Amino acid sequence: MKRLVWVGAVAVALVLILVLALRVLKPAAPAGGEEETVSPIVAVHVAPIVRTTIHGYIETWGTVEPQPATERLPPASARVAAPVAGILAQVLCAEGQRVPKGAMLFRLDSRVVDVAVTKAKQSLQFAERAFERQKQLGAGEATSQKVYQEAEQNLVAAHNELANVQTQRALLDIEAPLAGTLVRVSGRPGDAIDLSTVLAEIIDLDRLVVSTSVRSADIARVRTGLPVTLTARGSPSDASAPAPDTHRGTVVFIGAAVDGKNDTVTVRVSVPAGAALRPGQFVDARILVEERRDRLAVPVEGLVSEGGSSAIALVEGDKAVKRPVKAGLREGNLVEVEGEGLKEGMIVVAAGAYGLPKESRIRVIGR
Image (cartoon, rainbow, N blue to C red; front, side, top):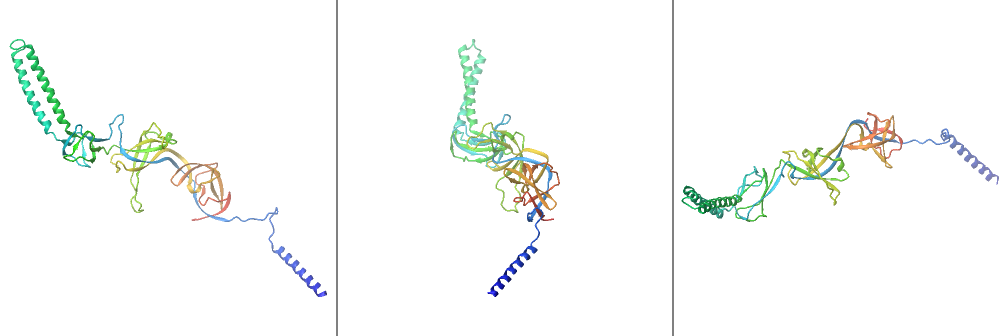
């Protein structure tokens, strides 16, 4: 019995010694009774706040088409058709050919009309001789007034008949209504054509526009004369291929009505003469609607959105401190910011700002 008591006493003593040892090894708590928490070090990329000019754009797309008629110019395209029905005798043009205004394009079979022209000329010659004979006789002397007037009327009628058949003959020669390039030729010799047959289409390739659609919510920012950057769609996917050509145009027309199907307004942009664009081609259009000079900007990845507000993380020593800002226009990799105390040259977290607490220790990568 005494032995069991002795063993129990020894065990209690060992427990007390262990408790005392743990208390001695435990670090002292900081003042105030709270335990110290060590924040982790976050690796980030940084960049300076820059002062630059920020542009605002409306980006859309459209198709290249001939310029419609304006107050000062006729339309830049035309579909060529015969003014009379007949048989196509000659095709004097080819697709891709550039022709001046009035150039002969097609001829219809003129054999019947040519006979009528010859007959009308002969009738005119006869009427002229008859009238000359009456003039020599003199009205009211050797001939009656009635016969003299009949000869004069026959002469007028012969002139009118010749003019009529010559007009019919001229209608058989189909000319270019404007200067331009023949983008389509469909007539062939021997074809029977009528007034609805389109024989060719001509477009003045130096007078093209891009027809685009702008949302009605943005149309108030668009006005004629604004510069537009045009880029052909369907650029090569190969990274080694040359970049697609861009062209500079201007807004020349803003529609007055909103399309109820898609809530957009038609906007036309001029295409510079000689541009490598063709009718029907799809084109991306970027309309410059605003320019803000001397503005502070940060990298887009450095702007954090939290709860409907924006913030950036300013670098202060080895810490990053979040500051609320007002975000503005975005262009490329930069976004405009405004905020109290912000200055050009201040360093901000450019990548890795998402998820950072309000204040955290950082390690800059790349320094």
